[in-house]
Image 1 (cartoon, one colour):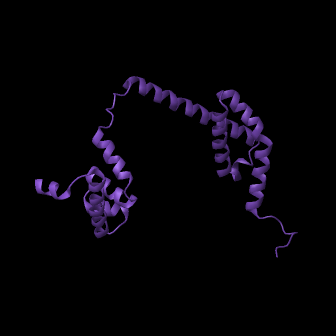
Image 2: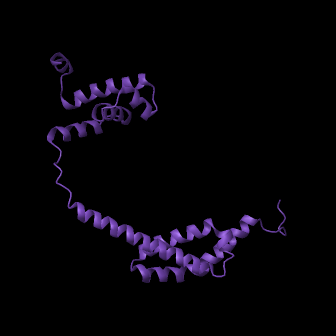
Image 3: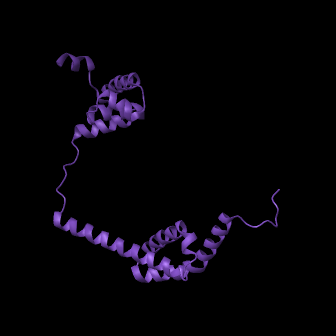
Length: 177
């Protein structure tokens, strides 16, 4: 049984010190960031990021004359960085213009996707990777972490099940090939 009088470990001291700092500063820093960003959710996200960075460097930050000022500065910089990133994304979007219209799926695609949804996930994955992504059987095996023989069996069973679900006569299809 540990000695109750024994001194706390350095890790416990660090955690305790950071927890005390966090509880003492979180409301002030949140209010600062809320006023700065104008958005409570953004303020929380930025503050969490700043506290995470402080925790990672707490052995150094805790010895600063004003650790709260360090966290406030980091949070402000994170917020500004997000604003810049958002502004740059908006500018890029405006330069590129609105995306072109994408055609909706045709009736055959809708039927295929509905039929695929009724297959077991392993068969569905094998069929989609092999037939829709044009991956060779060996690559499907690598991606699904399955033996090549297993992938071949999944493809065969999946094709038969799809044929039934889509009302396709496999013998007739094979004779046309």
